[in-house]
Length: 211
Length: 226
Image 1 (cartoon, rainbow over the protein chains, first blue to last red):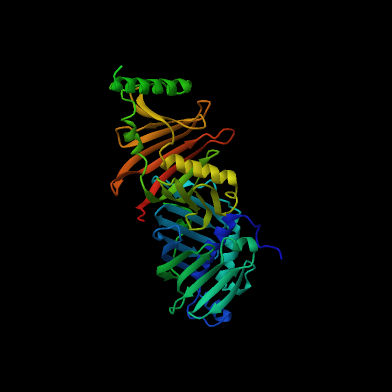
Image 2 (cartoon, rainbow over the protein chains, first blue to last red):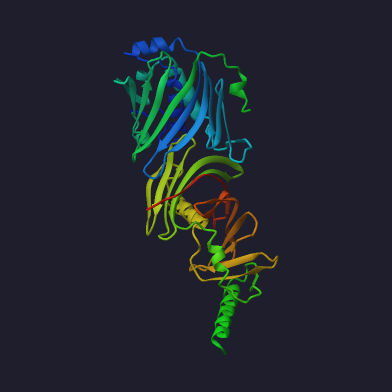
């Protein structure tokens, strides 16, 4: 089977996970079937949320906690911003992707960013916007009690980075609770979304300007 | 000759030999006291003692462009053990390895999946956090700055400059006297009784390789209790 993207490209995989988290926010809670998920997803055109990300690994004496915000506007605008412990901003506006970071307070354009990788984001977000988790070539998907969606990479090389992803659904329609990413070596990354606004009016500047 | 005088003469000879062996290095002159070993303890205090876990935001500059990752370094100064992890800001692990007697790569994805990269990274971490191994003498550079000079087994030299200001500097020269690594530590915090820099800048010029610079901002420093 042909891989959905070339194996070995880390940034594409990171992009795919970002896309997943963003796309997951578009889900409707308490869904019983893919059909219900797709129907609910069609009602959502934009999202704003705060998030807390917690990384647990055997090497870490205590979890590494990051915080930030996420803005998404259909079909192809995304702002994924980490505020702590390091400021990092991914901007996607109508397919154009830029990334900035600040180590010393000054925002610097990330030269290591693979713009091509984020074409994957656009494709994935569009797919998830339609609630098409079960039609994703990169993951197998199943609905599980919780309720949650369990995604497992099809690509062998991808599985070396991610074992599975669980999307925890909230009882509140249009809201998810969390995204948990299980990696090899007992490493777990958990994103919890808070203060979620569904279908807010988000101006273009949010997706075009870092400040 | 009295025993103290013979001892001081031996130290002076050692200092002269170390300086002579490193003819392309900046010259150092013995301290006014003539005691070239007592001040070395002050230099060694710039390196963290015991077991620590550090988390840094690392800005890497290579070929004129910059990118950022998070680095976790778990070290033991007594065993000289290192466990290192590099991850993206999003938390995706790119590299994990440890080094005690041997190097073991636990996880690595391209472009980090090479033994050369792992060795270079471990050498960088050891350079930043561990006191150099080898005989050392203290002295002053021509500009008057205090310095401790260590001669390494491979013929290289490490100079530690425990500047009285808020930080210190460490320079590593290879066997040909070429500056191979330079570390500047600043914005020092006292954590668990030890001086831990919040800012580190490492400049490396690997022989036959591409020069790079790492700017590291301390996110967290945790002493690890047994």
